[in-house]
Amino acid sequence: MLIIPVKEGEPIDKALKKFKKKFEKTKVVRQLRARTKFTKPSIVNRTKMLKAVYSNDRNLRIEQ
Image (cartoon, rainbow, N blue to C red; front, side, top):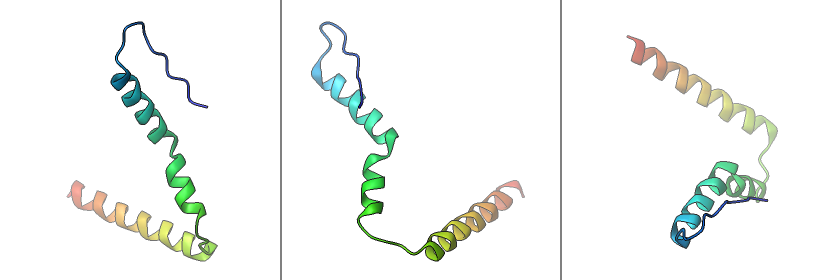
């Protein structure tokens, strides 16, 4: 459960903005979308490996 402290006289828009930021940081929506479909563990491992290779290559290019 998210708790957002709201000060006296603070506009609701500002409190909603704080709530949205906190909600995005918890990554609830991302988890829900991931649960809607099943991906095989081999495909999950493959995508992790491809992301690692890509980020490693990008880091090497930046260093050069």
